[in-house]
Image (cartoon, rainbow, N blue to C red; front, side):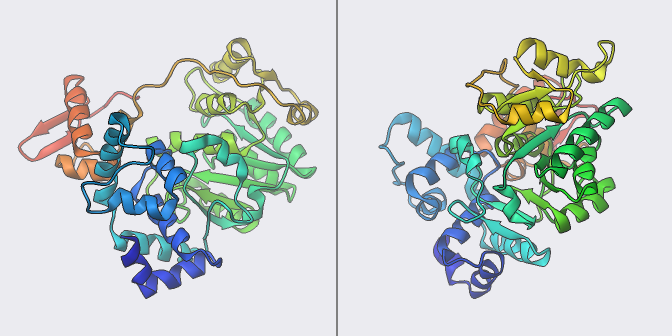
Length: 398
């Protein structure tokens, strides 16, 4: 695949437009990896770590059945590579890579890869789950400017939560901190707006491509971030946001920030997923307390009580937290199988799909999808008829 991509003059020209450096083969390979593998694919990450992006791509999508994984042909390594190839090869199309590069050029995005001047080395702490590349609209230099604070919280935020988020983000951005968040409704949006309101710096990680403004109600905010801050995504242009990709991008918000503050969160809020990544990475973690009767603050109180988060009530306390280094922490029990979420994300309640198409959309092997569909069918989450598989109405949330 890499040879055909490099031989395509149009793709080579597109790469030079989105990445002006000399590493053409490396850029093409990493762009291809962002197309064929889902965010956080640790098998792909380990392969790239061992062989480099170019040789790893050849091993991943090559035609040879006798390819040996790095480190020797152990049973586990061979099985992981075989499962990975089954996930990646259905997406390995030169046209898709070309579309990603052309889409990036169209919205004036650039490709940032490890080794670049603006590559945020803090993301390397994610190990094999680190991103292969980042697609960036706006100021790529903000990815490594210090200090960087991640502020996250509830989408269904209260007036109290929005007030606290605005106070913290505005004060810290006004004194030079880069505010990192996820561009969502609620606390995320308030934090971004507060930073922009004081002519400060802000970075928004998106779950889909940087050419897709999501949520739709934040089109103007995201446009302003692209002009004055930075919009960043791991998936390439043209990629739709899905529940799995929202969960995967949370690790990037936690890893880029030198500390993370949860302003407002329910007991099972997605913000706790970001907090869990921050704790696992050893980043300082703070939580803003709320009324004990407020369900919107139950997650913050849980962080304070169970996970040793620091109580944060003002910007000076956050600055103090940014000056500390916490040890490694574990953060509670593992989430449910993420592949279940990916399969459900790939399906709809109206359109029937064959297993191969679900596998392509989910970025999983057909065999893995087949086994997950069997379990989901038993649980009543999916339905099967002569036309194929579909998602059952009112599927339970994962």
